[in-house]
Image (cartoon, rainbow, N blue to C red; front, side, top):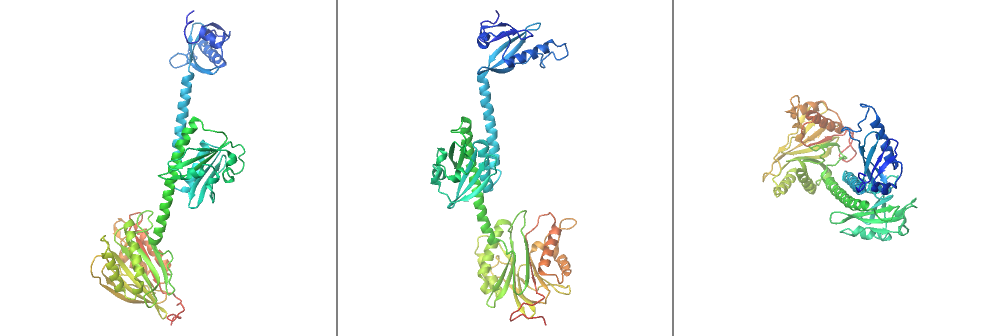
Length: 530
């Protein structure tokens, strides 16, 4: 018989499924059955015979090339691919090829592909946030998705530990615990080990209550795995599993996962630490949010140049007590340049002026000492300033105004007049000698003095987008602000400058409005208006 000695099983069956011929390999595999089988092969045979028996044009060609397609299925513990050949009339010859090893290889390849895709997705989620809390929750959640029934992520924070919990079907939660890592075998080693120590498998009976929690009767093993960071361990991952040991695929995934999880936690911790340092340093650079003086109404507005910037080269300070006479001092300045370098110099200038407060009665001496400090700096930067000494003279507010290369303050009178303070001086930080002229201004109750940086008058906008807001336009707007409270006036000026510039690039803006209260404060120099 043709094909009797071939190593591939071969059988011929008619349209009813009756086996007419089978070679030795087929008889050995299928046991000499009279009807074609197994079930998947019988089904494919009957469907093929039905299509072959159909009239031309009614689907007699099973595929685009006119040849019937092979089918695949199990025979015992092996997998075979059956290739049909039309043997004439209503008969079909089937050749069976053992593809078990190929199927196994394909399953391994698919598993590797799925594992790689899962790892890419996990790594993307882990690195998508620089927030430490969300990162810990993501590590615990992904560990439950791929490796365990429950997971705990332990990160040391000082003498306490931040622990992220996630159980299958639940939500991730975080707890700050005062725990002893020695209570769980392997945890202390995992938290201090670098390079990472091997995973430690622990009997659930030896795990403390903060690890197991409640409702985990089916847990058969606890795994403690170190999370490697940058030169130091980032923490530890505790897995609660319903089985013992990892499968080969889980072993590979776990090794890659903890490496990426440790990296993500390390990055998030560094970012959080840098953010805390930046916030601490920024607190000293930011101007006071709510300036207050007993003798005057004071309001301020500040906006740094650049999208999202918090500090820049403009600044203001309000010192309630300055000089020997106990008067207050208001300072508004503009450092050359923008951005972080200007903000750093701003901090130095503010600290220097704070140290010079005992000299505040003599504005010229303050400016000279500040000039000496800036000239000693290696960076050739300068600053323009306005100093305003604030005190009472009966019911009126007395201001001693000194400009050092800065736009002079504007005085808004009750009758709508706007006056420029007659003060001028050289800027600070470029010349060996500085000169200044101080003017004393008296404000009646309801009148206001406006200190502002050049970011207000040099804002560019208008119909063509290149016109300066300018001093004249500012004076005209201030005439309409007569009698306005200091807070409302400062807000109005900032709004006008912002609207004028629109979405265009803008400079830093600092504004301080000093108003004479309509009701004089009690005190030796106060009292009701005359």
